[in-house]
Image (cartoon, rainbow, N blue to C red; front, side, top):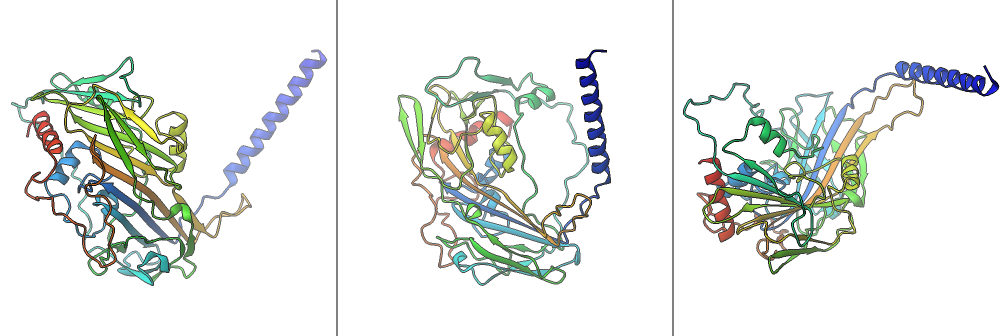
Length: 427
């Protein structure tokens, strides 16, 4: 064995010993304990058409449900998911010291225009869990007829290798799974559950006023809630401004431009519409540089996921101000969605110990998620149903153009899109 070989052997032995010691230290590290109390705060801004049931959701069935009366226009819990135009806030609080907590208080800063506090109330009943029963398939079932097309990427012309096509008359379940693959890293946020007080509720259903800010001191109080549950919300988690988008039809190319949002982490656009006249053909387009249908991206996402998808060129960077929808993709009636992702903030007290052998026992933790979403018709300016300018008087969002029995009052393009969806899915 020469001198060089001996040195390599010695170094390898030393490295192996270090790795073994590191693994042993990791194995000895105690498991973290869950926080005594946990709060989830979701903040959302919706702009554009403000159509109910379409906020942050590009699922065709959900879109249809909204057009047929999916929201009453009332400020109720859940509007951060599918609210109309405006700013919305959902809060959920839980404490292990009192699993049956009925009421709590969240102190909020004066800039929220909801100060000094929000009253949180537990729901009266638990949401019914989904059934595990297998669906009944009739012997005379006929698969839907039609095709679904997927295009992706900003630009004047359709890129080579596009579109991906799903022929529903011949597609298997596996074909559907492969076609509708979408990235998603949405974690639990504000939610309804017994013993977990929420805001808004029937006892406190105030709207978030125009110009409100959540920056500043927040505190939670309630039976079983640690007295230390206090934190300062910084600017990056404040209510995001509405997306200001302009559109121009340039000989069939839809040119989209928007103003920068200072607290945005990334952007993503998606459109869904029909093609042809009377044909059961549905078309999806997204701003991603790689194949991505986008159905899972129009919602809150974690910071690491957003950063990873930026590198993969699925999302648009914050210095991007424009995107073109290529010519020849859509017929009439495409629905356009855009999301600006804010930065998620996870807080805990006390902080994780620096001693790796110490057990972490946080008294409380809080997760704050922020987003701004635009819903509009492709090629239509944003003026219709933009965010309300006055909400300080407690009035409800305008629903003058809605008809809860159907799509009457919707623009012609949307009405045509709904009819195509009906035809494709057979109802």
